[in-house]
Length: 138
Image (cartoon, rainbow, N blue to C red; front, side):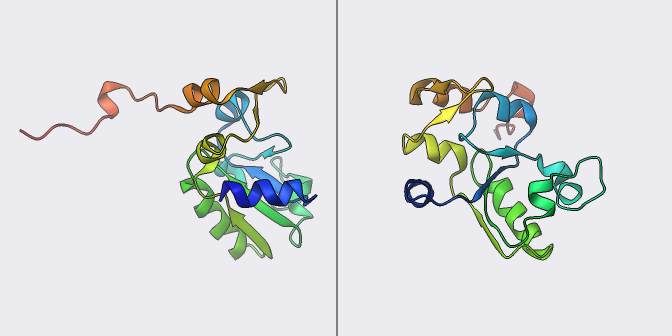
């Protein structure tokens, strides 16, 4: 939960904060110190000798990792995959950056500017097009 991660960081814990959202989502806002590896390239990012290799992950199977996404759905799937890949200590941030913001923890933009909770909430709001909404049954 967000408060667990907040306490861990405040106590000096240094887990890898792995944000698996798409680069555009990450650029809008993210938890300070997090690393962006989109879910679509995760497996290659966790192994050496790929264009997508993230050295922190490829060499970090024994490190503590907290996986982050917008709401906690992509991160829980990612955590499961990472455990299957041999990562020893992986957790998913339940409620994602939305919950982190609800708990009023800091989020930053691509330039490192801290966003206030209201501005972050606006950026986290769904932007569904009409055709993406479930049809109404008459």
